[in-house]
Image (cartoon, rainbow over all chains, first blue to last red; front, side, top):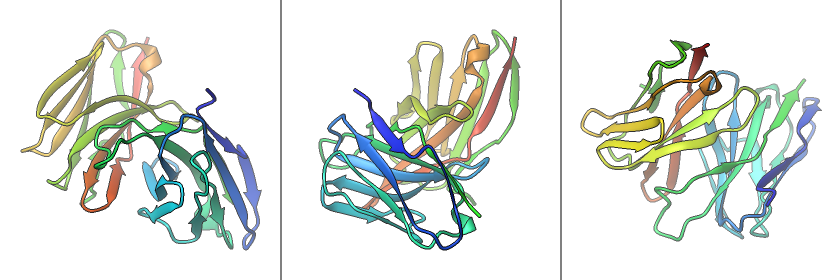
Amino acid sequence: NAGVTQTPKFRILKIGQSMTLQCTQDMNHNYMYWYRQDPGMGLKLIYYSVGAGITDKGEVPNGYNVSRSTTEDFPLRLELAAPSQTSVYFCASSYSSGGGHSYNEQFFGPGTRLTVL
Amino acid sequence: QKEVEQNSGPLSVPEGAIASLNCTYSDRGSQSFFWYRQYSGKSPELIMFIYSNGDKEDGRFTAQLNKASQYVSLLIRDSQPSDSATYLCAVYLYTGGFKTIFGAGTRLFVKA
């Protein structure tokens, strides 16, 4: 199993450009997440999905969009990139059998380092 | 007050010593608590989780939870240089919607 894969690893954008960060997992996990991590800071949840076709906002959703058409893929779209979106983006997945997911482990991808100039 | 607070460190301990990492949280409805280890330039990986008051041991790692004091800690016994990393505390809260809050992390440095 490859686990959680993310592409690209690095990207530099100009202000106002758009891009899509790709995330794929092969563990048949139902939950998927997008986080951003600024230098010296913890992870902040951008969006998450509890299954194909279902997404919801996290803590910092502004400036981002997501979709979940399949169990495996959870792309993150940045529209009109801004310098404040310079960060490392992590995708993660986990499995929950239902009733919330208090105890499950999140598996993280290797991250995408994005710089907006 | 931040929802999950950790001392940013760095915490420096000699090899073989016990490293003690602390985390406090503000929401009394928090249900479960996680410790992730993150090496520089890498993604986080789960070390332990705990949801009941008391201690939970796994090898050299012990997680301690005190819900009355809203405090969770991670002890690393016989610290090794390979334990040098940032340790993220995460708190899970379900209030009609999913919410996991991460602390900013504590940098640990184990001196050989």
